[in-house]
Image 1 (spheres, one colour):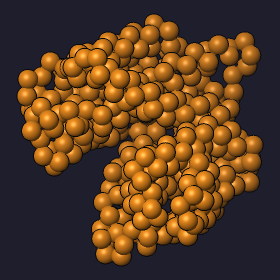
Image 2: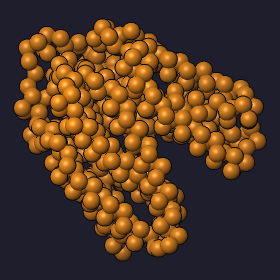
Image 3: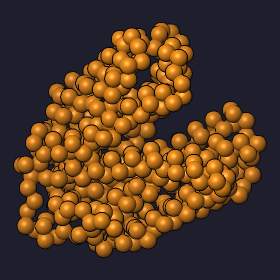
Length: 406
């Protein structure tokens, strides 16, 4: 496996904040949580608007996929440059500007007169959203220091709330008004969040003010971040690959469309709970044990969904959702431990780019496998991928501090 540059791998020595300064971490978590909910909601409300755009602009399914890809592609592709920029400009400023840019992109989308203008607007909004994941995660990690695992789990959970709330709100707004006016209202909400970040969120600082100390360099574990990134990429592939085939598995078991909708909702509810609870669990039993538990549980429960009849299969979906999404919170919480303090944004940017990219590519690869072998065997391949993560987790353990190896 390729080894990343050693400046990614220094152990963070930031200590947890004491009680006298606890208001700052809480303000950071509140601001980044609201921001995460907004940006993840901005990302997923596009799904609600795709049928509307198809009807208005006479778009093919391929062009609809391009519209969706413009947003997600800009968001994923600019995360690493944004992480580097945060080494020179305070992350708080970049977060506020990025949120304002994402909102302005939706303003432009609401005012667009054709498909070209709409595409450029989505590209602009996605570029604004590229600031959110790496900079907000780094801000929470820095604010809480060694106690950041639980808060990072809460931060990730807030994104799931946004994914549930904003698309639903958009659907309700479309009943009362045109999609253009709905986007303008949602853009105003984004601008208000940007102002709130600028005024209320504590300063994060820049990477140039947090150079690694000699003790940090000595504690460097070469290859640790590479192992963590590999685990994150495979974990995202498992999650998105399974979601690709689940509706077809349910259909083959006799599920109606409403039943499949309920089943997916149960899986997503479990996933939201998994991001919250597994971050907490990782603090108490350690990173490696938690990853082994979630990935082993994922493989076991995917096999159960394949073998069980419809009703029992639906019953296990919430627990499977916990396992599918739980690993990610533990991994995010481990990034600062394998990264020197002044490189945290860059590390989060690389990590998010890898996992988001994997989530985009994996369904295509598993889809080809499904075409060749059928959905059941392709789904079994996702379970095998989850099991393949376990030896990678054991390889990662030697690069972690003693408390997190267990």
